[in-house]
Image (tube, rainbow, N blue to C red; front, top):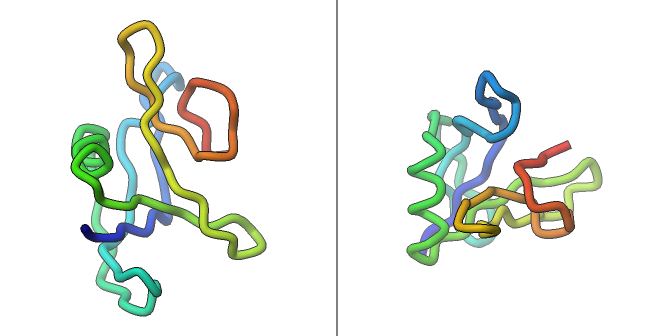
Length: 90
């Protein structure tokens, strides 16, 4: 299992889903910082589904995992402390 720290995201033209994220592979302690690279939405979904941890941090440096939420057969990315089933990173 690997850890991926997300530092940026881009929404699709419709503004309904995240189209890509920017981040880098790190370790559990977040002490390794490789150069950031863009990840497509599909790559992030695959990383999460195969047991990797994808996370970001809030303004107080609390780690927030990004997960996959499914509703009516559609998959959405969300930060784990937001209850709404849509792509939200605000």
